[in-house]
Image (cartoon, rainbow, N blue to C red; front, side):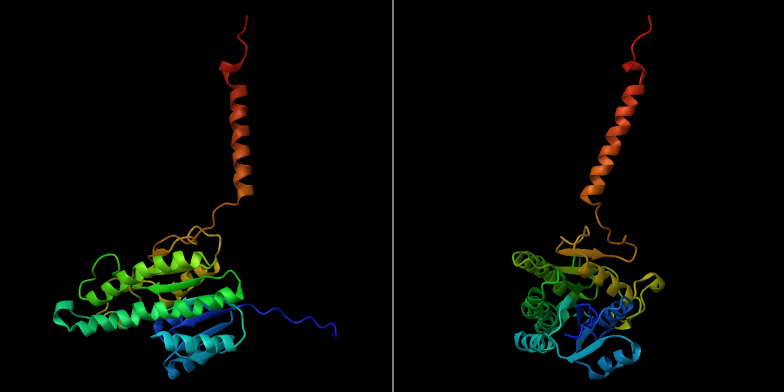
Length: 281
């Protein structure tokens, strides 16, 4: 040893679907907080474009996806070969919206919607959660979902069915992950993206008030990297642009101090109250 102290390297954020708008937003948000990023996707041009967008970022690109068990296993092997600790996994697997009535299209359209969303998320979690367990850095695994999972989204029935199934999958995987001391959650974005025209065939009203991909990416990162906030225990976190930020609960020490201060005030009021003083002769 020569006495040189090597700089500490922050654990990386693994972003699935970084070649799409929402994934690019996650990459931008991670770059803003100076996190090393491992970005995956199937579009090589879009992945290469990330280097031009973020020339100073610690960015590693891995081609691949999680469309099934085999693809997810291959991607997990590629990430494992990097031998880099993971802080979090953000699964921005959002398939393109297929517009039209469910009754007007063959059942293969619905099967494709489930394959591209539900099955891909299940395969990704199955093969990538063990990497978080191996790193043991306390990070979280966050899946990103879109609107229409609670009630049918008119004209996007396939997305609504897949979204509702993804919500249940998140609850199941959340419970199973807890038994392994892991945290998996679904961030369900109830707004359409303000900067992603592919999600809708027409510009939505009041688009200037809709969240951008980077805003959603920042929310996903805050959820994945926060282990003491009030939302950390929820399987599904619903997000709207006007929703308040995730806040940490007060510490036990602070709560005890506030309770003691309240007791002192109550005791002081009792001492000065006329009913507690001795009556005059």
